[in-house]
Image (cartoon, rainbow, N blue to C red):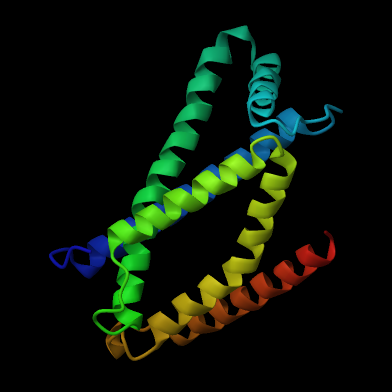
Length: 194
């Protein structure tokens, strides 16, 4: 959080990140659908075999020239996601605990980092040969946590911790509440399909 940045710069940065995330997400969905749909291939539960199957599917679709590129892209995606999570999550959790708990009961950045690393290693060791289960666990946790985080964010941007002049307008509030209702609905629907 850099207090020297103006509202215009912060808003531009947020909008650029949001738009880029939408474009990349849609690209992954489209690319995954075009390459994987209708292949009839049974994916392995082993992480290493699954990664190899994925790389081979894209190589078969795009050509042998792309194998090294796809491998590097897959590794870079996993590495950058891991790095972002290992950096961002402990920072957010440390700040959250400083806001929620009295001094002396707060958990600092390093403690959250250790908790995240230990949890990640336990998940990896427990599910390394069960790729399908790992994906299911991740998907379920995402669907369950999304409405929770959306409600927290809505509460923060409409609550007393943010000056009134920075609160969103009526239409944004209505849109946000509708989006939260959709998130809750999709989460409940997804849980009934398991």
